Image: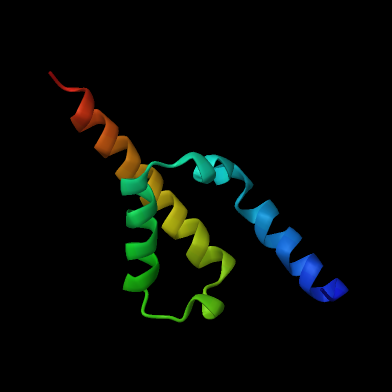
Amino acid sequence: MSPETIAMCMAVQKALESFAHYCEWNAPSQIAFARYCRELGKPLSELTVADLQAIAQRTEEYAQDYFALRSRP
């Protein structure tokens, strides 16, 4: 991997750090993340850090709603 690519990966990781627990999302949240990516209508290689941050935020909101509904008696 080139130094530029490594630097870019590190920058993306830093920008998404507040969503670091995305690795622990449940299947419905992962599906929602993929759906939100598709809704942008861009190839994955063209998604920006800002796009990914917005998608992660929407997914966080989805997950909160999902768990709120599941916790109701």
